[in-house]
Structures are given as structure tokens and as C-alpha cells.
Length: 445
Ligand code: HEM
Image 1 (tube, rainbow, N blue to C red):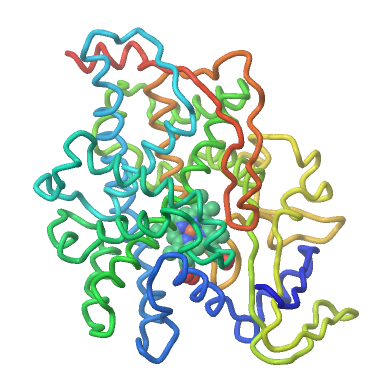
Image 2: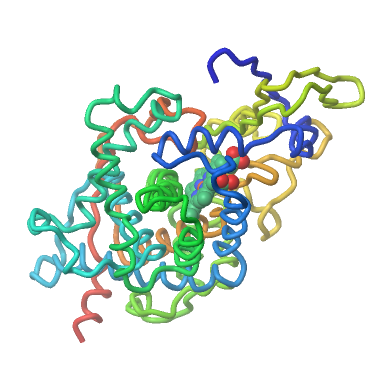
């Protein structure tokens, strides 16, 4: 973006005028250039790959609608597997009533990363594991590399050449090799979305195997890059607010009636319909996203024109200029959200329903909540992301007793990736947790 004129539109009442100019204000040009350099594949919107960009975008439908049900179902199974393997094993050793203390971000990272990976990509066979992976499991190695790459992500997106970023290039190569089509062919039960992308890439001789692998890596980043930190903020805020915690937990328990806790760990719990009824949980998630998302919606001007923002106000922009929306100014606007810096878990509930009408003065604000972007370029994974977060929070609130460790500072945001999505916490936050007693007893029966 260096050397470009940028026009920031700060008033949310003017957003619709920008969003409706999808053709003159293009998003794909910017994202294609930035993403291809960051993840290491050749830019898609060139003559070398005719139709590929459109086809990739069409496949995003497989993250929504009817396929969302199967993704959602698999996500629950994988969350249960990951939590059982990772934490309930401790209790099999007879340490059931002991509290465990852990870094809250690391907890969210480990659980969400593995469960999301397995849900989207399927499970690699053990025979695939290299000799040096015997000490650490393949998922720990992948997560470690991912974490190192992710730390450099803001610099890469800003256009810093990867060669100047220490070992980042070789780390990216390792991750990309992990997604080599020959390896992926052996993974069992990939999602329809990933399978369709595998099939699509096979139709393009101009894509090399490692280019295809780099595309799969990009989707891994998109699917967990923001979701892990979103999970952290949701859980952190709930644990910080006893009232929010108890209302949200009671709502989840209410959904299960007087079912036994072990049904939470069985396979067919929490249908999509049930999830939609958890409005306090959804409101708490929306509120955490409102506070922690600092994204920027960037559009590149396709030709000189006058952008009419309202009947009295136009801005003339030139080809190549950037027009940017900065939704954080909306998220923290005291006219729209009174006391905007405060966490109010029920801000998005009104008359027993999810609140969808917000006003600035007496004008209705259409784009009041934008963690997932806007218009045609909105995040295609948003429904899956909310489903994942609801499932993650429901299952953890139901099976664990949890408390923040006493005497800690409040969590603050690491603003180094402002503009790129959900902020990471700047400081470590510890919590303690143990499996609820009745869950363990029933599991052993
Ligand atoms: C809380 C979690 C998430 C947040 C906050 C988030 C946010 C975003 C944002 C802001 C964009 C750019 C949209 C724009 O500028 O208009 C985006 C794009 C994208 N997201 Fe998400 N996302 C999340 C989770 C997911 C998940 C779980 C997936 C699943 C695969 C996903 C897949 C994608 C993809 C593929 C794109 C690129 C779309 C394109 O090229 O047009 N996201 N996301």
C-alpha cells in the first residue's frame, strides 16, 4: 500500500455507499496480491489460471448452508475427541479432583487448532509421520510452525520480503510440504470443502503441487488465525464476569433439560437448531468480537470516479487509490454502543431475541457489527466460525469448573496486528480448571 492515496470512511452511516460499489471498488486485487505473497503461491488473478479465482470463491458455499450441518457435527466430535484425549486422560490417572492451571490462550489454541484442522482436512495416518516427529505428535509440530509463521504474519501482509524474516521462509516451506497433495491423498474424511478444492486444483496443470499445498495452507490460516483469539476473548470475558458466566452457562444447561452431563461428551448433542436458540451465548460472542476485532476493509479503486457518499458529500478518487472502512470506529462509537469500552454480555439481546437494530442518533445503522468484513467479500467462514465458538464454549462450560487465577492484571490487546482481524492478548492470562465431578463419575460407570 506504500505510495498509495488512502481514503478512510469513518462514519458507518456512509458504509452502504462504499459497499454497494463492488465493481468500482475491488477487494480481490488487493487480497490476491497480499495473500499470494504471504502464503507462497502464484497470484490467482492472472491469465495463467483462467477461471480459478471464481471457482475458488464458488466453493466457499461449502462452508455454509446444508454443508454447514456436517461440518458442525464433525466439529463437535473432534472437540470431544481433543478434550477427552488431552485433558480427561489426567483423570483416568486418578487426579480427577485436582485443579490444573494453564495459560488460557494456549488452552484455546491447542483445542481449537486441532479440532478445526481435523474437521476441515481430515486425519493424516500415523504412517505419514516423519521419524523426528515421534517425540512430538504431528499436530504439535504443525501448531509450533504455525505459531512461528503467524507471529510474522503482519510483516508479511505489509509486504516485507520473507527472505528478510529469519527462518520464516523455511518454516513456511515445512508447513507447505505438510499439505503436499500426495500426503493429503492419504488423509481420511476431509470435509467436502477441502475435497472440492483438491479436485479443483487437479484441473489446473499450471499449478504445481507445492502451489496447491500453499493454497491449502492459506485456508488453514484463514480458519484458525482469528478463531483461536476469538475463543480466547469469549472465554476470558465470560470468566471475568460472574453474571455473564452464570446466565450463559444456565442457558446452555437449559438447552439440555435434565440430561446427564455425559451426553455432552456423546456424539449427537447440540444440533444447529439448538445452537441458534442460544442467544445469550451468541450475544456474548458478538460482544467479545466487537471489542477485540480491529479489521480493515480495503478496496482498490478500479478507475477514476466520484464516490457519492450521501446526497451532499462526494469524494473523487483515482484509479489505484485505496478506500478503506475501519469498523473499529463503529464498534467503539458511544452513540451506537453506550459505554463502548465495557463488556456487556447481553448487549445483543432484546426482548428475548437477538438484537439486530442499532441506531446512531435516530438513524438506523445497517453495518453495526463487522468482525467478518462486509458486502460481497465478507468472510465465507463466518457461520462456521460462530458455530465452532458456540460449540467450544458450550462444551467447556458444561464439562469444566473454570476460574481465572486470582491477582492477575486484566488482559490487554496486542495491537501489532491492528487491521488484520481479532487481536491477540498482549499479556499471559492464567486460569484453573477441572472436570466437573459428576461428569467423571458417570463416565466411569
Ligand atoms: C472469528 C473467526 C473469524 C473472523 C473474525 C474472520 C474474519 C474474516 C475477515 C475480516 C475476512 C476478510 C473479509 C473482508 O475484508 O471483507 C475474512 C476472509 C476469509 N475468511 Fe474468515 N474469519 C473467521 C473465521 C473463518 C473460518 C473459520 C474460516 C473457514 C475456513 C474462514 C475463511 C475465510 C476465507 C476463505 C476468507 C477469504 C475470502 C475471500 O478470499 O474472499 N474464516 N475472514
